[in-house]
Length: 299
Image 1 (tube, rainbow, N blue to C red):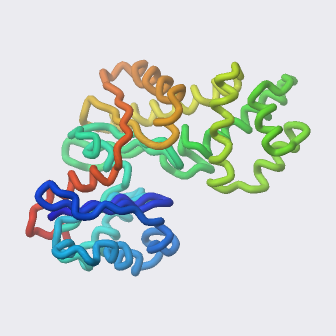
Image 2: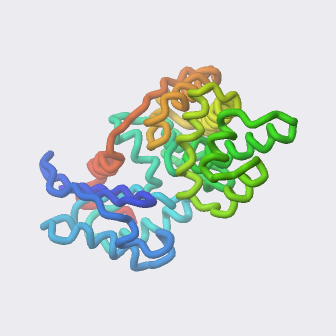
Image 3: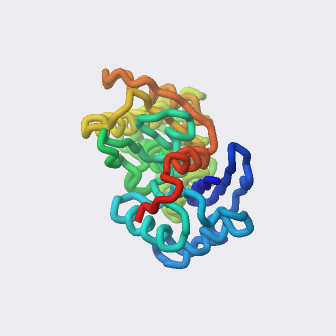
């Protein structure tokens, strides 16, 4: 028996398999067990593991958890200790982005997730984790839904400062907020500076781009350039693999962004093949759990 858990910001996906058969495959809102941040409450780990209750042998099965919020090795080590203390079988914990490559059947690969947030993750030949970006929608996360909205509003007001009249991007954003001009747009946009509110605006960016907005096209291109830069950064630091696997709601559902990313990665001249995947990341957790020694602890 093996178990994998994918902890996302909104949803937690649990999968247990035995002899190739699926014993449990279920999803629950992360808020049902996680109080605050992943490491804010020690009992979060206990409540997470309780999702395996009722499955005979699951408490001793090799378990891998890929979790949103494990953004440094210190955080990962802390969470690994909590897992090892409370689960009877061997355990491992990684950032949830690290589930993408094994979920898609790749060995060594650079993973790029672009959805609610964005992050580039890879490993060195020694297995050491590497990452770029992923510092939150206010500062980073290029191409993510909220960051696209942030950059779109900035593009609109920058254009205003040059004396340009609003193009389709500006008109769509102002219509969304009922704003009469760019200044009113700024006030309305920043009045609710939350991930959910900003992320809801992302489709407008792509609609504007499809309608010929040069500003919107520029926003998408800049996001793709920044993501490709992240790929180049982890490669320069020793990332292994010749494949880049991309996943996440925005990149999967917006071909314009994916195509731009492929083009900018190609321009790096690193010989990387870029793949778009749309598989459940929890499958990566299960694949990694298969590699754990059946009766060893990772404490």
